[in-house]
Length: 600
Image (cartoon, rainbow, N blue to C red; front, side, top):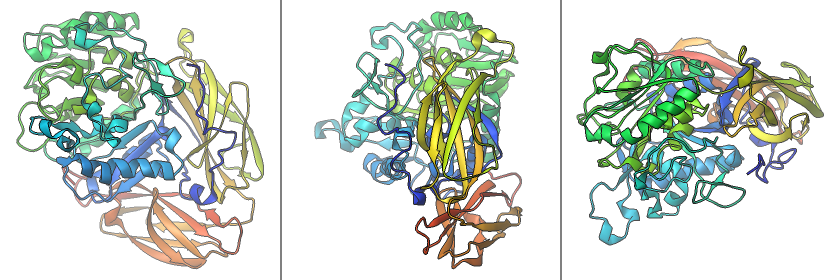
């Protein structure tokens, strides 16, 4: 399949509306950001609006990864964080998330559905099965695995429980006992279709959505400070081409022997890439200072006793029955043990899977990762039947990505613009000293206010008519995509002021730094406005009636950390109607020590 685009991509997306743009614009300092196989524009981040931990983790992740505010969805979830029925999952979580993406015109650009924390990790799906099968045990799946398999889940088709449900899987057939490493690594897009042999299709085929939880902060989960530690480490690892070692642990336990047939070929492939990899005859690497990844298989792993160091960006995966069972009092080592010590991601099944290889990542997960894929891409290219697999960590982490640096001529950060913009993008290699590893960029995409609105091939231009867009602040993102199968991305972010209609919205939020429980004073002025609305990312949290006024906001409902606030005004007398103020970030500190605590 060539590097084509879905039909929804036109030179200017017909569905751009001022009302939509005014609720999704985002401001940051002019910066060059990087990502591989999808980036922040391709994420739908789902947050529990009733959980301080969920809000706090999301606040930090949005800042770390520059997630556009229109890509953040706060759900009013007050149910269990352990288990719910699949009908509840469809009606209250998955369905609303996908509808929100469609309503915000994000549908064709979303590749990832990410849950912050404090959502149910286990989904009971007995009601989807024929009556004669509902009495069988183990009828549970993971929130991430079932989100990935959203098509059959929404269709109420038990096909999602198939051990061959995942056609994006890049490995030979593990059911035939052939778990040799190999298979062509490929980047992921939500609009790609995959055929029965894993082939990429121009139309039709099976579609998926990459999914992880950023954190589990209840039961056997991690504290919020632990979560922020591994998310910060993961973001810092991007594109670093790390020099640590991948460890494959071999011993007689079935948890290890299940994956051992693929160890040697995975090690050989990693070494061809210049990545150190070894097979050790032990349960855990002992006194190793350079753990860049590990494949384990033991019921009880106490990482602190190993005296080994997990390096930033590492995937540490342990095959055991209850690694994804995170309710208090459960047995066996939880996946959160490895996150606690700094891993970027780990996984575990949410109920007894038996030693069925197709339910777990194969050893080549580390190969896909080392070829430049994101963490989520590496996981989902490595498991045939992911329906019971809970994946927790930073899905965008990409330590080995070949990252281009994107430049744009035709507009400068901070400029005031009007009418039609013609942007000339280009890309230069960012991997100094590695000329043989430089990515070639063959196409570019333009995002205006978080929406993908234009594309061009290398050497072309990106055109944007700003007249249908709300006056005021507008974020422009230009993304360059490499020509290889991994499709690594780089981007540059420019913030400009649109002035086609002479509208303005000036506002401030004080204090800039406060503690939980304190109130935030909003003062705003937008001449001719009918009202001025304040948002936390894309959620409305307050409104001023009229063209000028003040508002006091309760900080207790925003989480802690860097909280992005935005203001938009409606000028009823003007045909274009809306104006967008510059976004403001306030820093909210926890009442206790640090930016939150376990289970908060």
